[in-house]
Image (tube, rainbow over all chains, first blue to last red; front, side, top):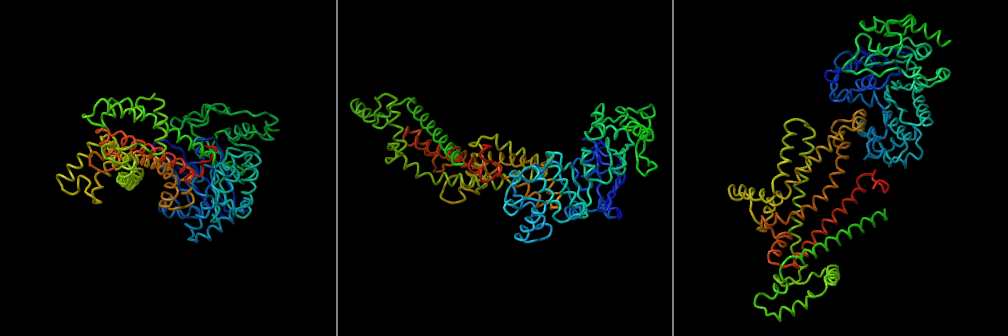
Length: 328
Length: 308
């Protein structure tokens, strides 16, 4: 299926002053494939994706690692060169489409802007393209609605507008940061269907979510992040079938699904760690049911397991075996 | 929309009514006999009594008040004993000078305050930002009459660059208009600075950047568009303040507007003119506030009937 890497992030480290928000994260997005990044808020998943876009907040800085898009190192590009890639090659949609859209400009203007400013289209031609783009994402009466403002749409319609805008110039990679979190369930399904249509047309995606159901329906592979690090990676099928990290195991038990309904939802004990005072050794050990003395002192590296997946747990094999017996 | 308009209009009328009432009461409380004022010190007791009766000063206060209200609605404030003719006409005669002054001051405020605010926002925390902040605070803290006198001393007396008083030339506007504008200029600069910084932190700015728009477009179109709304609405308020503050500034620069006329009239107990001037200023103030509210509709698409 895959025909080479589109995006490669290696050992990425992002710091807010002295705080390390992302601590050595590596990930690969194959052409036309979708990678999910899963984790609690504060795990560094959004910061990782903003670093890829070159849109980190002013206080944050990439302090290590590399990001390459189709072999081009994004971190070595001049700001203006990176800017030109945004919209054209890389695009992003956000959790709350109401605040992500400009309240004082019509949605038609905001979409048409892509064609006018980025492609030099005339105002009339750009408006026409914008209406087409709105119709394509399923907005009824697109020509009439193009003159409306963001607040005049429902949440689902606004997210469709965001998608139309992000995909206007046919980028190759779309980063979707919690694209359905703010929407109700039926609308959520419609938005996911829309994204899947685009995937089939060859769009590669990074989908950031804490909703394992959304991940299962959109992504081929998954990275689980905890406290700024990847703790597990693999294909969605493998990871869902049998997590190889206690944190993933906890996430699965804590989210409602057919799998957990029989056993009930169990939240993970404790809270995500304070980034300024991370536990020694494995950052997850204070909350981990598998933790031993070794976890307190020795940081587990993300290591390959026989099946080609990876886990950052000293006792990954034991976790795998545990889950097989518990799930049976 | 119509409903809202009617409600706002009714509120404005009520406010105006309040202003007229207060002015009426204050002028009745001030010591001094209008009849004696009009007739002068040579008048006999009989003359005075006749004049008082003519003016209805012996009537109950309520009756005087109702009669007065009718007069105000017909814009009949009586005659100016000092200037001779109709008091309201005398005020209207001075109106263009005040409007010109306020208009120029507004021009100064906008032309300097807006760019200063944007500049400070773009250099947040740096020297330029702090300089604008100090300038703004100083401008607001200094009393206008003192600033006016200092500007006259520097630019008219010492440097001999600008005329100190109205001499019919356009440059004569510079000092009074700037003095009038100074506190509001600094105020606007801070408003624009803070508004711009707030807008810059909003999610839609990140979206605009994610679209690959240049920083110039992100700022000039996406951010400024949202900064502009509150600015335009305060401009109406500022203009209202200008017309009210002109009372002091016109006095300092001997500017022949409503303000100086009002002070001359009060000093000479020419209450008809003073009252006409005060009511006209109140009308401007209330009218501009109403206009500001209506502008909100035009500028911010989110403001609908439900949100006001």
